[in-house]
Image: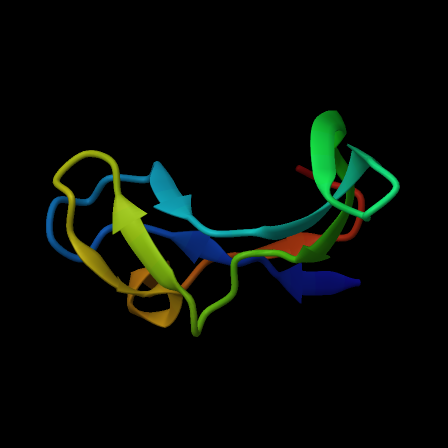
Length: 82
């Protein structure tokens, strides 16, 4: 069975390395008031991965736009092949 893979390229310079914001859960040490004391784990779960509506930045040329602007057509791949 074939599936289309998502690929991303900068529409300005053709770069393929980006910065985008993810939302993650952290484990904190807190005091008796519930106030932050110390970070125990910086990422226990990913709440939201960078999506097509989020702002992406090309690390090659600093072009910023919605992730959908970086999406390019990619060839179909057979299941299990990479």
